[in-house]
Length: 110
View (cartoon, one colour):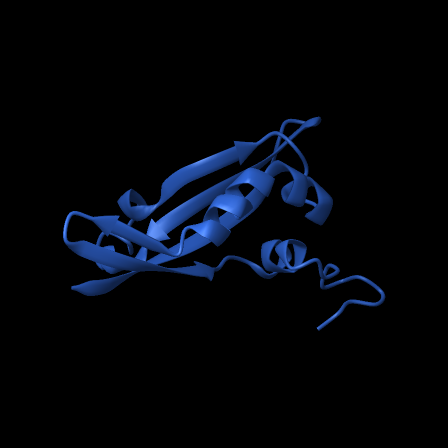
């Protein structure tokens, strides 16, 4: 039996106080349907104590990115699961992760 597990990754930067900036990275297993649509379906993966920039995310998440690149299938007993990743969130986070400029930047890439 071969089934696909669909995982959506999201992230968002937050200012806590004047000097503390963090980025929350969460994941949702889309196969969970109703649970995935509620707050119980959002699982915290990483909290990074850095500002939300491409270079900060790239260096902080290097191990996670390598694991995700190598984890395309998962075998449990007689079952094999393909893993499919999706990326979602607001424009600012998606642009940051993809290495694009901010939407209000002079030469924003679209």
